[in-house]
Structure formats: structure tokens, C-alpha cells
Amino acid sequence: MKLLILNGPNLNLLGTREPEKYGKKSFEDYFSELQFKFRNIELSFDQTNIEGELIDKIQAANKDFDGIILNAAAYTHTSVGIGDAVAAIDIPVIEVHISNTFSREEFRHKSYISPIAKGIIVGFGLQSYDLAIQSFLNDKND
Ligand code: DQA
Image (cartoon, rainbow, N blue to C red):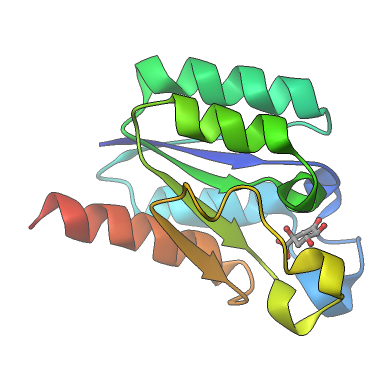
């Protein structure tokens, strides 16, 4: 199984960015832990701060991966284009968020991705990514 973890804007700053909300670990460190834990599957990770690049990466992943774990960060709440990209591809997308967006500001309650996502995992800290991988693996074993 080949899965892509795709992170959007400002998630390159994990570890130092608002640690009370997003924790003190960099995503690179966490990704190494995930790669070790799930060493039986092919896990890739990519990040961009640019909306159009996220769309390009979602489109490109369609050919190369079995699924995407997508944290589009702030673009989740604003980007019709990213929602359309998720709708345009054939592989399943799980939307994840580190923080519980529903316990935060009203503008974070809206997601252009949720209606098209296979599922949504929100508010478990970095563990949200781990749970998303597990759900792909559980599906595979059905
Ligand atoms: C986030 C939640 C978004 O509202 C915010 O803009 C982020 C991170 C999360 O993972 O909790 O950048 O996607």
C-alpha cells in the first residue's frame, strides 16, 4: 500500500508554531516515527504553503498512490479549488486536523474537503495522521 501524507500552509512550522495547539514536535520527526511504525507500507510526505501546488500534488497523487491523508490547514476552510481537486481524483482522501477545528473559531467549522472526503479525523494531535493510516490498513484487510 502506498499512502501520501500531504500538509498545507504553515504546517512546515510544526514544533514551533503555536505549540499549545499543535504540539512541540516537528512533522519531520513525527514522520520518521510513522515510517518506523508502519514500515510494512510505503509512506510519503509532502508539504507546501501554496494553494495551487496542493492542487497539483493532489492531481499527481492520483496516479501514484492508493490514498491521501490530507491536512490542507487553513485552505480547508477557504479553497473551492482544493475541494474540486479531491472530487476529481479516484483515490480516497482522508481529511485530518491536529486540533479540534470544531472547538475553535466559527470559520474553522467550514470545510470544502469534508463532503468529498472518505472520512475525517480531527483533534487527536499528531495522532490524527496515525489513525488515518490505520483506517486505510483496516480497509485493506476487510
Ligand atoms: C489545522 C486547523 C486549521 O484550522 C489551521 O488553519 C491549521 C491547522 C489543524 O491541523 O489543526 O493550519 O489544519
